[in-house]
Length: 114
Length: 114
Image (cartoon, rainbow over the protein chains, first blue to last red):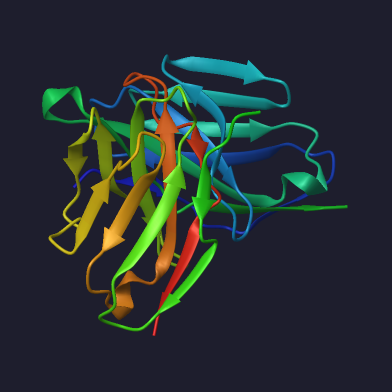
């Protein structure tokens, strides 16, 4: 069974700080990685995706991927109280017929304190 | 901005009853998905649907579950005889192409089986 693991937290950071969220995955063949944000009782919202080793930046968000270590992270710079949410890491699993589905981590709860 | 719409937002049903959860995907999207999230647990893939047939289904998606796209706009998930353990948030999602995993999720239907 392919797994995606995250520290459930809660991760607490002060406003303006950098929040660092981490995710590991078990399938060495995984190619595509996604970060979703989920507010309590709401649906997941795609923040970023990354396919290649290294960093990918989008505004205050940076995704980092290290396939050799099977590790993907999300950095949030200048954290705001509105960033307080659960951050879900998801990895694409490919199956026969090129079907693909997302395998999800449990999520890390982030609290940004004013 | 286009969005995936789900109804109802909350459904309470007696154990053993049939329920139908409804979704209207984004109009030009071709791939449709159902995911569920039991409270406090990971998001889980249920089924993907393309070209009027199931592309893939998980082990959760047993004979009690079915999906249908009855009229070219709605995408429904039917649970024939609900069990207590079916209580969860059910998310519909859609994507434009197979190469894009679901970026757009509906707001979810909270199903409570009593």
